[in-house]
Each structure stands twice: as C-alpha cells, then as structure tokens.
Image (cartoon, rainbow over all chains, first blue to last red; front, top):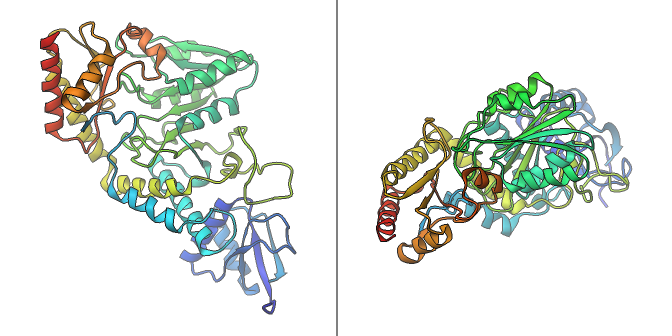
Length: 78
Length: 379
C-alpha cells in the first residue's frame, strides 16, 4: 500500500456539491483532487476534496465561491 | 418523410447530440459512484448540463435542478411533492394529462381542485387565477404553451399573481423550454418542469425539475444516492433528494450537447425561424374551404403548432392520408389534452396537429399546404 500522509479533506452532502467544488478549485488553481471519502471519516461513500494541510484558507474561499456548504472539513491520513 | 410532429418530439437534432450520446455510451461511468475518471467524467458532464440549463432558465444555483426522465415525472414530483390533503390547487383546461392526472389523483386524496375554463380559442382569462384563490390555495400549475393550440400563457403575469398571494407557482414548459425565454426569477416560478427531447433538442428519457431554494418537494422515490450509504433515509439536499438511482448519464450527455447548441445559436434566432414557418403554413391553409383551425393566432408569438380539421373528416383518417399519400408525419387524435379538446368541441373528431422545427424547410411547409388543399378538394 502507498504511504499515508496527513491531508485536509472536505466532504460534501451531494455529488453535485462535489462537482461544483471541483470546478471552482480547478478555476482557482486550488491544489488537490476528488477522492472517495476515506472510511476513517465516513463509511457511507461519496466524494471528498483532498488537499494539502496548508490550503485551508484557499479551500474555504473556494467553498464560498462554489456556494457549497461542506459536510465536514478535517485532517485525515490519506 | 416530411416530419411535422416536432411537438411530440423533435426528431431532427443537432448532429453533436447523437455524437455525444455515442461517445458517452462508450466511455461514461456511473456519476457519483467513485472517483475513477470514467465516473468523474459522468459527474462532470451532468454537473455542466445543470449549469447550462441554469444559464438558459436564469437559475441562480444549478444544484436546484434535478434530472428526471421527462416532464411527466417532473410534474408528478412537483404536484405530489408539495400538495397535501386540504390544500387547494388551481390549473387550466389547457393542460396535458401529465398535469391533470396527478391532480385528479391528489383530488382523491382530499386536495381541492379548480380548473379554469378557456374560451373557444383556447385562451384563459388571467384574472380568473386571482378570482379563484382561496385561503387554502397552495399551488397554481399551468402550461407555458398548449400542446394542442400552441397558445402561450403569460406566465410572468401568472407568476406575479401567485407571488402576490404567496402561492407556489409551477410551470409546465414541455412545449417551450429551449425556444421561448424562461426566467425563473423574473417570472417568479417556484417549480419549472421540462423535458429534454422536445424543443431542448436532447434525447428522450431526459428531463428536469427546477425547485426554488426554500421550497421542499417530497421525493416520489428513494434509494441509491452515492452518499450516506448507511443512513436509513435518502439525503434531503437538492438535487440528490429528487434523483434516487442512476441517472440517464448517456442521455444527459446528449442533452448537454443540445443545450450547448441552443446557447451558442441563440433561442431568439430559433424561435424567429419557427414562428416564420408556422405563419407561412397558417397563411397557406387558413382560407382552404371547410378547414377549421384551432387556437389564437392574433398574438405575435405562439408555439410553432397549427392544429386543424378538414370539414367533419376524422382527424386520424386525415393524418393517415397525409402520411400514406404524401409522406407527411403529423399527430391526430386527442394529444393527451382531454379538457382542451372538450373546450374546442373536438372530442369526437380530434384534430390534426402540424408542428414545426427550425430545421423544417419552406419546401416542406409548402408541400404540406398543397397536400391539405388536395385533400380538402376531395372531401
């Protein structure tokens, strides 16, 4: 298995929220990508945006731009 | 074949629609079910379709548009999802069965139903909406354009009446979405129901429901959502709340291409062309002896539909002759609009409906006019 690193992970209420977030992150060059929700956060499937720990501020701005209310934002070993 | 049945479904689509569906069939995964490229591609194209439709309908938040299979599903969702026993709802005689039958079902469950009468030209007096409002009126639901006469409803005015009385306003845009301007904000529309396969030029099996933020629509179905698997309840957030199960991603890829085409071409151009063709046909047939044409042709704009009868001839017979003898495809019968036919006095005879697309040619219109003249002469 690949080595895990601590990352900042945002989860969403819907797939549409995740896609809106991805689009804004790509437009604003926010680092990261969509990943399956780590089971350490939730066992219930769905998409999450995974980025570096240093990106919290730009991530919050991107959420605001996308008009998305995140389900949760937390640090996680990914 | 000269296809003049575009009000049933637009058979001629921009070529990129079929190309997009074919590409999706070969490459698209299931949207929202994992994060490999095939599923993300599906999620992306579906999300971008929401965005393009939001642009077309002036929807602020694209996630307030849920995808369905067609207008019928959207209307069932909207009507059954907001009305409860004891509520009152107002609709019109212009409606398709996709509005009427869900309303009749709700009436059996204790919903009070008022159906506004039309005049002999299939017009509704707008003040009647306001006159029929009661203390328990919850919803006004009406078509934007009659699928039989082609008459347009002034939905901005009806929206104003509904908003003034804090009543939900639901519009059936089956015959108008993609050709006539629809601005859910300016027109104060709370629920907009549309299908993808008519004037939006997309594939059959696609459609949608816009729900204004703050309006809660109870889902008709629950199930797979791609999120919150271990919850016993379906997620309440739009659009997932109304999209249980796998979406028609392949069809939506086609709708994406279709709406892109509409936005690039401009719906004003398309509408102008369709109005021209419809008027050309009307001018050609209106003086044929024995012809009866239904609807109101005085307003500048109307759906590109002309419904008519030749004398007392059975509309099914006339439509069949048009196809067998001239290769002209039309729609006879009742058009799933029983109350409109009652109001027009055409329950027994039905009517022959000609409907046009911007792809229709002048030659096709003229051939149809000539065919009707010949048939009328033989009566």
